[in-house]
Length: 146
Length: 146
DNA sequence: AAAATTGATACTATATTAGTATCAATTAAA
DNA sequence: TTTAATTGATACTAATATAGTATCAATTTT
Ligand code: FES
Ligand code: FES
Image (cartoon, rainbow over all chains, first blue to last red; front, side, top):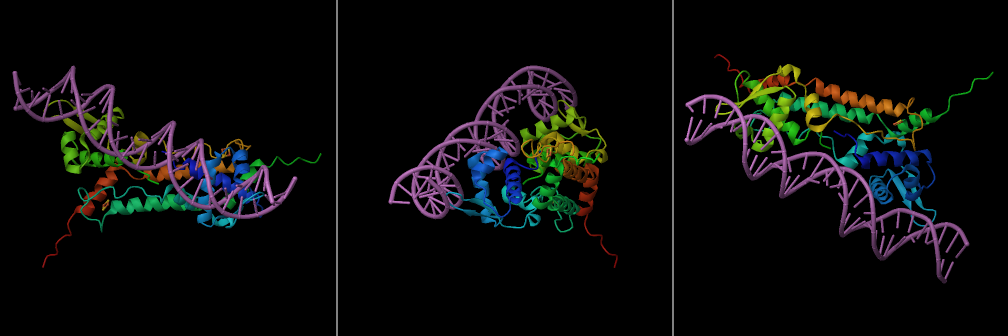
């Protein structure tokens, strides 16, 4: 069971790249090359992000994409919803045949509870947070003064 | 994003049927008909359960499948693992290109934390619990003595 | 002996995910 | 003002996963 598919994965990485260079335009090509994401695939993902107002674009030479929304406001839950659809555990697992009482059904509550746990866990993870974590992880050990 | 696929869904329903009739054999056919599960599909799922020692079978006329493992010991996490593979958020989302420091990587920790949250949530849900919840939901309102 | 069943396995169909290709429109720069 | 680098839009193909069907031998009860 894969929780994040390639498109979400790529989308997150592309957003990290854009968040790191906030305020300037990055071309799809450069992002694709640097982060090893299939170019045309990435372009579609980026266009989708524009529709959701996460980023903006500029045509032509020196054009590209630029962060629009605050990275701390972009959650992995949102990205999952954009690229993989809303998180749902099961349509209605125990249907009429089994479960006669939708209104009182404890199972349904159980299922909905898990759904919201998954969602809220991913909500805690924003692009902003990931970027800071990433920078921290990549920062070299501080040298000790002799 | 679908968390449970049909096979897990069907497997859970079949197990509920078997757990409800613990101690006697139920044929694949009867389970399939009663719970509206494609017959041959169900048979494969049941055979898989035998391999994992959840149930046993008996050949021939009056044969069928019977619960073996304690329903309270069968978690949805296990069923997901059997039918959909181990829960994994992303292979290693931010690879060498982005993340240079696997050992210290906070992202990886974050990802693994979420993985275990999802798993442990589903671990709380056992076939035994589901069955009891289900029976409670289906039980008619107790009549009030006049 | 007949009928109802499982075991094993191969097959088909459908949907989702992943990736590629094309061409028009735009913009900066030569 | 031409050229090159870019995005917008969209159509296409390929690979994989999910869902479902079919077949036949072996077993067991009646
Ligand atoms: S599980 Fe859907 S109504 Fe009970
Ligand atoms: S995310 Fe895999 S090592 Fe950092």
